[in-house]
Length: 200
Image (cartoon, rainbow, N blue to C red):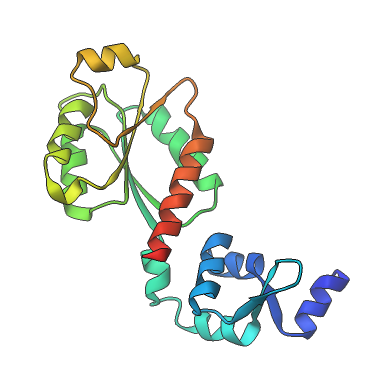
């Protein structure tokens, strides 16, 4: 054990990283909880946050039913008919170790059903799919006020001109290409959505 960690243990203090790992959330989530007073902590002269172990233990004792943990998990649905792409999403998003629940469906019809039943925070969809394509699904969802503010990302191999010829995409939809998928940008988006849920 390092001198720094030993000192923290002696003083019954924890770092934001310690708390994040213990609760299965992001460091930013812990920082917000400290700012909101849910966890007792302060900033060192160097700008690092320290949380009292007593405060953490009290918070953690109710974490199973704590609304903070429930509401800060990001509910994501991916509408994609390619099993290879589904696997890529699953492995990549899991590697981020963020509080994200992900559901896969294979066409626009299943996507509409899932969205209307579960109100996900983020919809990620392809455009070319069997039965009901992404264009039809997105138009149907954006026409309903309830889903107008839902975050939507389109990941497609189609060129912008081809998309416009098909009628284009609704306002507010982010467009990513597939070669390769810009997962770093997608990760930033999801982190921002998680932080926004905390601040709500």
